[in-house]
Image (cartoon, rainbow, N blue to C red; front, top):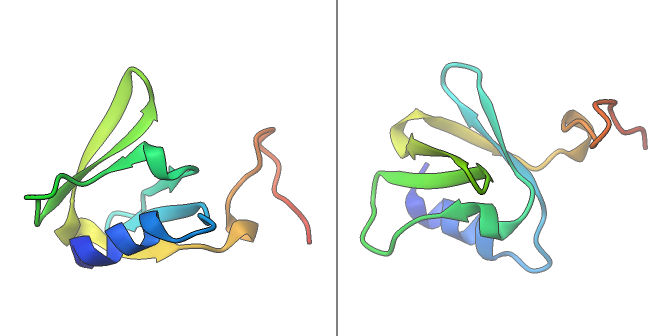
Length: 83
């Protein structure tokens, strides 16, 4: 994964929410482009905000994929969406 691929996913219009999948199996949801920040000079790290008080700094070397599959993402009530 490169920072350019991550920026492209963030800049896609209309924006499509996605999960950042890490090597340890963790999934970090990105529901809106404002939740993701990659400084212009950054090549290996980026920040994902969970709410105004919580954020996570992620090393790109740990990212395996970006998952755009809405069926794998739980809805707001904790139940999976059906299509």
